Length: 292
Ligand code: NDP
Picture 1 (tube, rainbow, N blue to C red):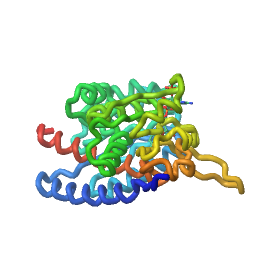
Picture 2 (picture 1 turned 30 degrees about the horizontal axis):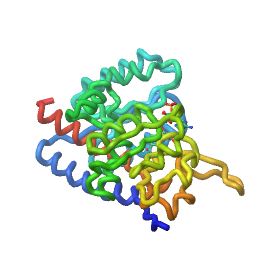
Picture 3 (picture 1 turned 90 degrees about the vertical axis):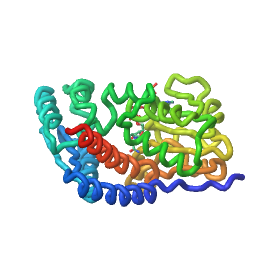
């Protein structure tokens, strides 16, 4: 029986935000420029509204400017593209984030492609995706970046470890696989068509769940002592009424098998906004250095 230790993403993210606030203050003193993050919210999706509010609050707490643009659900693609172009041209804006998902008629890829790659703090523009994949400096998607920070904090060097990423989305699975490759892991990306998924997972020294299916990854899929990072956020009904959040990993079953595991909530989730703030400061530094 392995002793399972929690990876406390909430505490790590808090420390990171404090450090970032110091770095932002020093940057403002040195350059006279306050980094600005513009967040675009289209429509009335309640979960998106909560995310945007939290991002705005934490941006301001870190000493940066938060600029929120809310467009109605009836906004057209042309409206969204015009706003993004205006933000691209605004020197007070160093980072642009368009909250996904966008209402159905709007083509998210076209919107992402319009964001200036230098201001693309979500790291979803193909230029940043390409730069990451060929090993150049890039703005890297926030959730995968947060996962790798937690892994390096827990394990030190990741070189040579077998990593299995379950999920291949452009937002989490694929960029996470690229980052793990950059850390010299041996990476497998699994997905809905993978055969013998439990067996594939059992190979992993590092097992990542990024699927969006409550507790799909069972305890006996985990190699004893493996480090488990649970990206999934799933709301499920509680037995006595109400709801609770669970991850993609059966957390209780993983106890005594995994060496380390992130809880849901309080694991990967808080890292996402902390990494967004870090990306905004990075983008501001590069734009100021480039004379922008
Ligand atoms: P997507 O729905 O875009 O991707 C899910 C992936 O899981 C797909 O690649 C899909 O495979 C794969 N999958 C689905 N079912 C299975 C299955 N039965 N077996 C194996 N693979 C399967 O989700 P996201 O990547 O956007 O998000 C994943 C989870 O992470 C969600 O719970 C989301 O809420 C959470 N999340 C958390 C964040 C945070 O801040 N902590 C940020 C972003 C996401 P295929 O490609 O074959 O369809």
